[in-house]
Image (cartoon, rainbow, N blue to C red; front, top):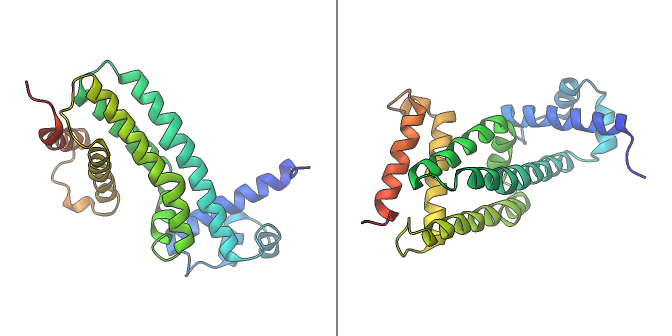
Length: 207
């Protein structure tokens, strides 16, 4: 028998609080007493669900994998691809980037925890790579392959193309969140269009 609705809601509150605290302070500096206070539960309640702080971190990573794997790597991206497949390559890629921006902003605290902590926890890094990174790159390869068949892309290594494009978008998102001072424009859509233009100069099939 699964957990009761009340127990599940309590667990979700703890996870949400942990994401916020880990995002602010990092895993090592975070205290379970702070998480408990943020979640509105007794500290002992946390250990009823997560015997060790490490278990709490793993649960957050699992939630990130579930969220990113389904919403980002699969469902949402496939939906955007389907809705924009008849558009020009430029508009097609722009729609994908705008969708990634929206999801990254919505799940920023969660992403921040995972990206930061996998630098220090090999098991977290391996989980992320196996369950998210590889899946995302392979999906990107498929998407570029479809556009290549449509005649939009020249004969290139699709895996490298997908990784390169994802890398450019990722760096742009990181700069927007952590280094807004380095941005040369307040028009983010224009920035996206410029990044896409730079990318396509290397991969777009010439007439």
